[in-house]
Image (tube, rainbow, N blue to C red; front, side, top):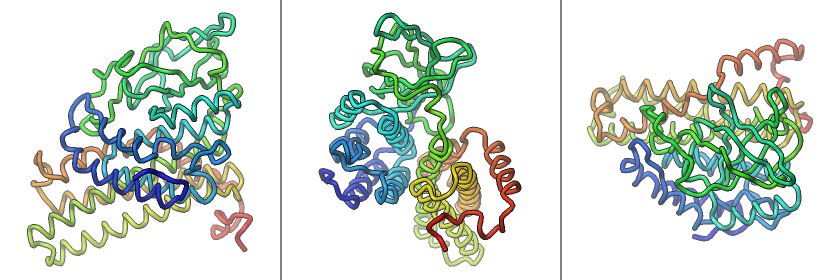
Length: 380
């Protein structure tokens, strides 16, 4: 299937890619693993180019009405492989930042790279010994330093990173071209889940990039509501992982003939309730960011609640599925074992307590009836 400009094509392409990814996921579950065949599927289906905006001649996945389709695409890919969903979410994030902050020349070149099949990523986590920095030498930027917890390290060929010109200076965004298989060290990634995400450290020292690689102004990367509000995308991928766990749980009950037990049915009903609750939060969060009818700080508060609601739903479904399946679900080779490890790992996103406290503080200060907190300007 080759992706056209219709949103339904993106969703159906993602559905097909997810089925193939699910069939390969067990083989990729190893230290240093990477879903190379799955990423190639995304390129062939046009999904790597799908986020290129319409004003640049692309399908515009994620723009306006296409935001609902983007949520579905992320969910579906996450259900097939959380590692693949994580990588695609970063790819989408990078292209959206290019669309929002890139100049004409940068947009033209980078969107052409997406059409050509380059995998983009967003890497902003700094190692303890210091982050990425640059110095100017004429029209060139000389890089030094590293990024860590970089998903797709060694496979992402267009990395959107933040870097500082001097200590304490606001960070700037750069897009750096990388050669596959270079500058990556995956030895520190020894998590029990998400092993196929090729997460590691990337050293940029000695690379030179043109000054035109800078996107936007100082600290543009952290602009709200898109920085915090963008968390809805990883929540959509997590939702796909929750649904995959639910599917594996259902298959086990059907295969063992234990589904008629009233205790099993009660657990299953609660799990289905949690999964649907997560879906409703993700859909509304995506809509809040897309429509921007709420004030930026209120959008951020809502998305923060949404990401935590999805986390809670995921932990709930995991606990109930594992209780229902029992010891078999912890044995290697059982589908639930790998799915549980991947989901438990991917649910661990940065600063959950700060997200919850920030949302609660906003609600407290808003001084509006609880039923009106999330009503946008288009609601009456």
